[in-house]
Length: 52
Image 1 (cartoon, one colour):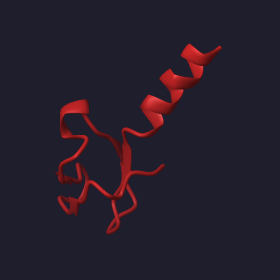
Image 2: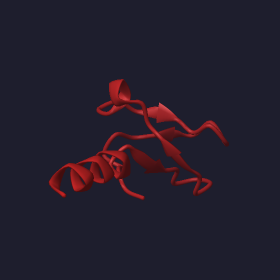
Image 3: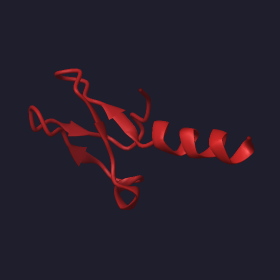
Image 4: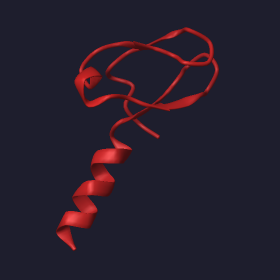
């Protein structure tokens, strides 16, 4: 059961929400601690904005 929980948690923590347009996107594990551009509007999404 613990393996399933940790797998779900890992996927959830890889999603970020854009502050400008509200688009939710999945982040690559390599970009976990970096700012990324929103796929929809191009706005910069900071690394501290990790939530669903």
